[in-house]
Length: 328
Image 1 (cartoon, helix red, strand yellow):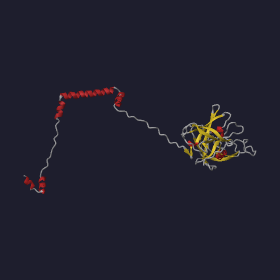
Image 2 (spheres, one colour):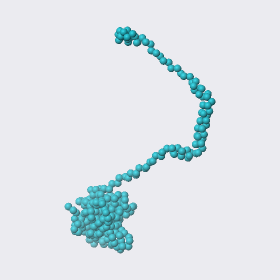
Image 3 (spheres, helix red, strand yellow):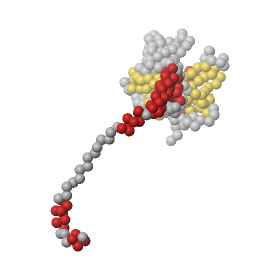
Image 4 (tube, one colour):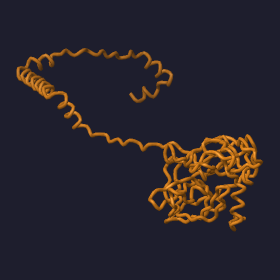
């Protein structure tokens, strides 16, 4: 046998194998004899019927408990998913407007009266971080308020009310220009660095300006209003600046700035003859024809709720005359 196989050539073996017919396997379907026998068995049928009845009883019992019980049964088998609401995202609030860092340079000045009342205005950090420029009428005594103590309040957010952080003392005053410079000291630990405002170099009629202060109406937060220099008024040797900025009383002593953050003037008010309270106007022309513009002339409004701006040049002169100079 071995010799015969070895004598076959390779191509002949291939031809021989090609003559072999392939085997075809046909799958036969199994008859369901076993299944039929299974269901015909009495014991099997009894077990199946009992199982079916039990399943139906469970379903009927579950529905009989009501929707709340079903929900309780379902939720008790599922571990509850804990969900924490995300922290509210606050809208970023800009604190630098027109080159002025409001949080670091704008403060509220409070004068406590001996009778327990108080009055307030606005101030700006001036020359250095230890001094505040404001209006003289904010810190001076009047009949209804004999000033006992002075304080300065600052803010950490644009939308928050100011907090009392410094005590203050009058450093220098200019009654005619309604200006006062206060020296301040922290009441406790105060980590924030206050920044002195810059002084505007030039300004003219029509130049846009921004007033920043605590108006005392509509809440305690700081307010920014815009307008322009509308003119000038010469009175008692001072060139007052007229403005179109609408400013309420609490802005007295605050800052009015140009668009690059330079201090232009200080919102102020001046009393007139025959009027006991401070009014929103000042004489700016010779209405009685005596050749002079003085308190005998008619009071004329010169812009906004607060009449005019005390020029910043006058404040610089007051500081220098008192020995206070900006660090080189």
